[in-house]
Image 1 (cartoon, rainbow, N blue to C red):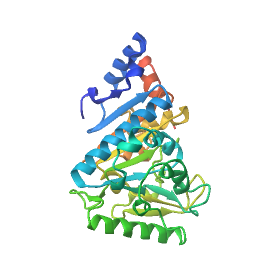
Image 2: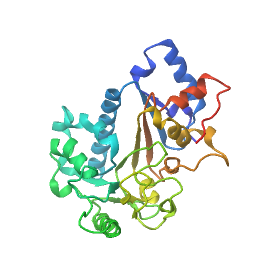
Image 3: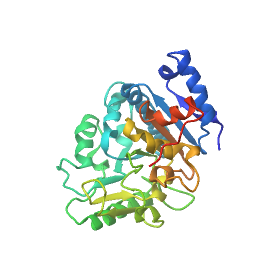
Length: 301
């Protein structure tokens, strides 16, 4: 494990009062992130969006300088709304958008114009506002079965790995995306990998499909854990009090042991890359509560 000093805090969070500075020291002392993990906390969604934009910008610039490309995989939910700052100055003018390649870490098996489509929401809220080339946007085939869509998507990624538009992991030959952006569900799911689902056990597949999502729509494609964990950088965004238990069980060493729930978000541990958590105050509330009261009872699922 790294030292607790790897925890990172938005300036406005820890400089606003002595109480917050004290809380910062207490939480830092209580949580030792696993290797190459970092936690960032924010008072407001605007501060989170600002920091996330700068983070993505930096990863993009480094990837393009080192590889000539920036391969980023997105998820759905509120995540795209937190990328809004990239559509504004200075990023909309300074980023080398021609080198961006867009993928989805998971997608719902619906038509691209369907209200549930992650592609649709991403196009409306992000892609339509930045000059990313249409030929660099890799969405799933919505004209086939979900099984065939997963097979097709993996084939496309394999072809791009061959020509190194997408990197390759030196550890396991999985694709090595420059950045995978994830959100976390209240049950601790990431991408479309849900608790206790057989898809969590897959080792050789890069992309798989499910037909029994516990939240609608039921049919989805998703990256597998080996692909997610092979990324150079992974960012998990969490907002809202309903995510607090999931965040606690995903991050806290206090949640280890035979009674700890085996939630997918806890299984996100980069093989050779770095993981950054972006948390608002509400989603981090159980982490805070643990430091405020030595007698704090760990939350239960």
